[in-house]
Length: 87
Image (cartoon, rainbow, N blue to C red; front, side):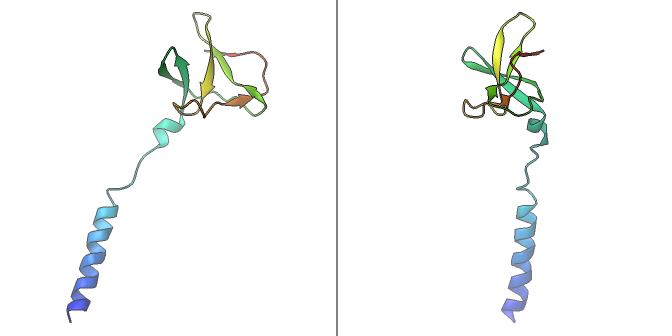
C-alpha cells in the first residue's frame, strides 16, 4: 500500500524539481567575443564561414582583433577571408 502512494509522490517531486533546471542559452548564441587587452568584449555575431585562417574584425578605431565563439582562448573562429570584417 505504501509503494502505491510513495512512487507517484516521488515522481511529482522530481518533475517539479527538474522544471527549475532548464537553462536558456539562446542569448549567448547571437554573440561573439574579442579580447581587448586582458578583458573580453561582446560583439554581434560574425558569419566568418569556414576555412583555415583566423577570423578577425577591424574596430572603428582601426584596431584588429581575433574573433572567438565563447570568452575562451580555445574557441577561436576560422574563416577563408584574408581581410578583417569591419564593425
